[in-house]
Length: 396
Ligand code: MG
Image (cartoon, rainbow, N blue to C red):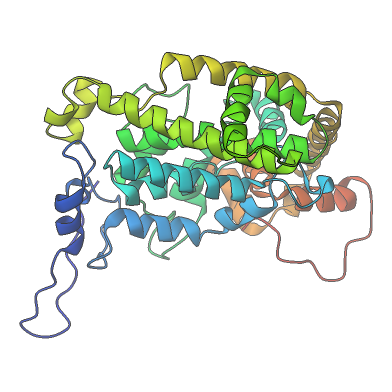
């Protein structure tokens, strides 16, 4: 890993570029925040754009990647057949990023790093959400399985291309390390505070929006949610201010209340930790075991809520039917491509020599959107006629 190289020089003789990022971070970030100036840099040395900061540059590269845009057509919990109201993997990512930035600002952490980590956190998700991941994991069991968090690293380090001089997006060591800590089976290196913020924001976002989507789609009744302690208390708080609300108004107000309360809890818990004010650096925060975590009361309530969502939404017959169809389509395409790898585009055929046939097929399938899986299954497995002109949906 090399440190960041210097920009070639000022555009006007004698003009000195002020280090705005360092100055802003000195003025605003807490001593325990990750500093851009302390980055361990990128694998391949590059000239950095002055005034942007390394983590903002990472964010821009992630946003411009094909894998990021394809999140718009990948399942969070519900697929396209459920209409247009529900979250996709992309809108989930945007909600996580918004919550994470708000939390990071309150804790005076590095928001640029938080934004990059949040935008990248689900980049490796295959089509059809966790059903797709479980299928690929089973199909690749002999090759070490499939984990979307690990696949995100393969995407940003090998498959995406930003500069012809090297593979991948050449992200900073801190963004790569942060994503690596999300791999549960990986080495347990301590997660930075910025990574912990994204984890907490992910949990806040999906608990809220999966419940919201499930009610809107008619899989759950609002009254069933209001019977949970967490939702019931939030509804009482809301009704103290608004006596007559429609069910839709009440649901949205309760969701807003729950997100705000969880943020308040995280911030309060954080500043309650001993010696927060005297921790001098991000490294010292890791040594001291500084945590971004819910209070035991909130953690317990969230667990009960997540168990309810698991039983009632993620195991709903409609969702299970979608899972089964998705698993069948992915397994069918896997067998078809393993038998005829020439159906894959050149760069995935090229991956076969590097990572083996099964892994290359798995990577190709993981890059597909839900609708591209449907489309390819129709043509390659069901014998439908190939459209005259293919839309540019193929993972590239
Ligand atoms: Mg997520």
